[in-house]
Length: 377
Image (cartoon, rainbow, N blue to C red; front, side, top):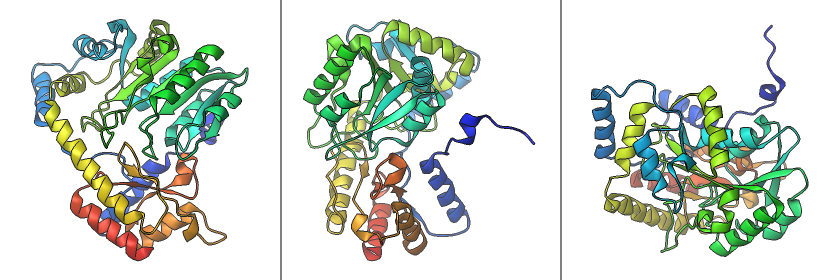
């Protein structure tokens, strides 16, 4: 019998991906399922992006490329970060791989990484795979608890990871809080990892400020972004990291052994995405805000819910709907079985008693799915 490593034996698979597999199974069996569990916008990839990718294929851009990424793409990305050089940018296979790499190069066995919760499902798993220990810090009203974060720092703490706009809550952290957090990171000699995959999706005139705007923090900061959500390129698997030269150089060394270069023609698609007119993205964001407002107005009639400021999720509290011996996973199972609506349990994000609802689906599906949930509730 093959013996597996302890670290994989104890690793739980992604609950969001497991849910997606279950929904696909039910759809293949002919069931009418509304999927609010998927974490991607329903928009088509812009024609310019597809065209740029196809042009690259036709031009023979199918061979090995630079480990750090296409030079022209890195140059364009660096321009979005004041004072950053091309050698401070690394292109990776989506933000997920870049986050994994960051923990691998920052953490030794026994180190600790502070994670405000609720948080994206893979943060904790990736920290554990590095040999370090995730330390979960509760939030207040989905916002950072700066006092709790400061109290959570020990001599084993190596990094703090934040995600704003947040998955699953949609919270956007105020810049003043980022400044306080940045001061803590610099004072303690830590690294702040800022996952900004949803950075474009903010509403009501609110801007998601990146901690990169804090100049004194830049030597302690790794920013990770993705083309997946903003540019509707989830299947392309292109993300990028910007940070101090020693950190990026170490991530490049790891990537040279991990995967080599990112898909060459997909990077040309990403380069084309940077040229798409802002009006296209702005129209999509406005449509998502309208969907947020509509879905929130309906859900809050039945469940307590903090109105999200960004991303494209609702995160209502379902504890009043649970029997004494029930968990949020039971609620989700009943909802899927009875109403044919798939949502993700909050326990997947370290915040039990809630569910995550993705409203970035076609309007007809949104209305049908919310209607089914209302009947179920």
